[in-house]
Image 1: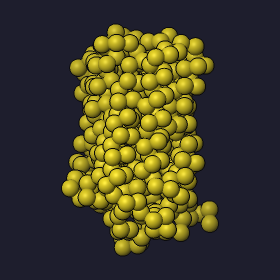
Image 2 (image 1 turned 135 degrees about the horizontal axis):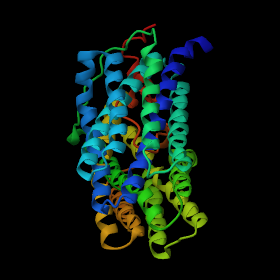
Image 3 (image 1 turned 60 degrees about the vertical axis):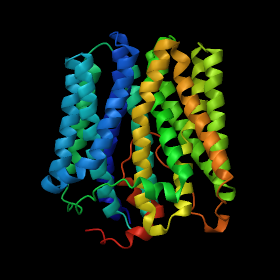
Image 4 (image 1 turned 60 degrees about the horizontal axis):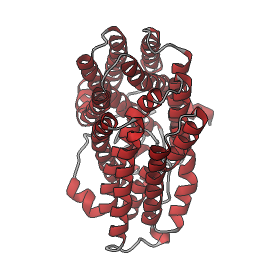
Length: 421
């Protein structure tokens, strides 16, 4: 039994290094930019550049993989990540960093699409749930480990950028030495907005607005921490606990959504997240313990919304449409993450660091209001006809290829080729 998981474990080892490098660089860049006097607008645009590159990579990476093959394409993308990491420490310039972040986002999208498609082909319908769970565990543990490395270093030196480059080089090794056959070519990503909206207007609007809120916090949360005066170690812990709290709360909130109208749950969680954001804005906490506790409470609410929105969309979709619907919603989420950092940086420039939560509160309040309006216009799906809720990554670490790996896509995967041995 264990032997059947060996190819998957090899891929997950490479994934762990990749995600650790991504988590480290994602936290290091805003902290170094803050320390070097980058404007708040520039720091926000760094997040927009990353998101723009990531979304572009979701569309363009499959074509590159078809030409070069999975192993060579993964080697290329991971090498670009390592080069960009080292250049970011070598050239500390606002305009250069914008280009670097876009290139990094593009390359990370390519890496993730290859890994997720490879895992999907190695999984069968009988073990897909286990593979998906392992992938989620590696995702959370690696991102948190990468972020916590920042606490052990000096963000004003070049050492942490070198460590990031090493991690990305390490991610190449398991794939490069693997004797496993490459999976079939990646499916090209398409976004059919009319079909997505017809399937679930709530999910379309929700994923876009959730992207706005999560993009704002994910990009500028570390900047908020630095500007209110907590230490680098405390910032790393804060950013990690926000993600972990969101992951932990997905299960209880998801189970509640399985037995009631998911839209009520989505609206309630969104409104509560807006209230927590408003509370942080007005209370202006400065003690590290209070800040970490309040932001963790925010993360527990903010990072449970996306999987509920996807589950609601799947309730209205036929099984063979699951991957298509989930992929489209993920791209809408990506577009939202491009907008969020710009809005939040503008508010932080005009007011104070806590204004990042004004941006998230606006998005969450709009989501809650829109969902409550839509509840009056469409009946709920009966409980017995719904898809079971599944946890999903609480950060921007998935591509449309991950939709095929999700256990709920098993019916769709039966129509595909059997995994290659």
